[in-house]
Length: 339
Image (cartoon, rainbow, N blue to C red; front, side, top):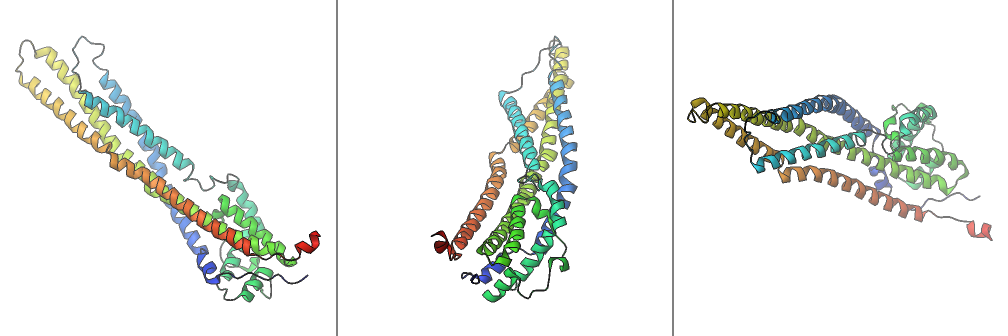
């Protein structure tokens, strides 16, 4: 069998496109630490507080329903703002729940990643990937590339690699596919099959896609999910306290009005409480409008859409390049064999 000849590739481009092990490892370390320290404690504490606040708002709003006291009507604009705040809360909590259950979990596109990682460690695939990509970084000629792919005189084996494995990436779908392709590329190299190079090319691209997916996840969690948590923890809690104040002062005002309106309509306590009721309503309206500001909420949604768009664009570009490179791999001898 004649030796397999490699097609012409831009070796410099191939080298530069490969992420370093340290970069991938550092990214996962930072992401894991940040999520564990910020998102999880915030979720339970905030959701419990907001739930309790809304119960209190409802109780205060219903205080006068069963009494014989005339209840002061709140402006329709105020009631509409309350309704929209509650709808926005539902949107935020749904987004938080969904993003955390997907982008907050490394193996969401490859569920077996939670247990398959042990098999990868046992097979030392991570060490093999680290070794191969470090070697590819220094390729300067087709001969060197051929030596790395087909074995050559290279004496550095996966067992001798000193770099620590970075198994997290292989919990993703593309990370797992990359490791599969690399493993079988090694197996085919002894027969000098074109499949060896094809599989290595796929592995290289897929590890980039896995890295891009993790970058997408980190951005969504850092810029969208964390922002939603912050708004819940700050603005929603503040607005709910103001809503409680509105219904509380209304209840107090209505009781004073029932007591003094006929006999002493100019009672100082009654007038002061009326002013307090009006003032608390106005403040609540201002804060609810801030919370419901369309541009702010659209900007948050745009983070999600733009981040996904960037990921899919990277994927489309890399896969297009990969497909083109696979098309260039020369296949010889098939016509004769088929005849």
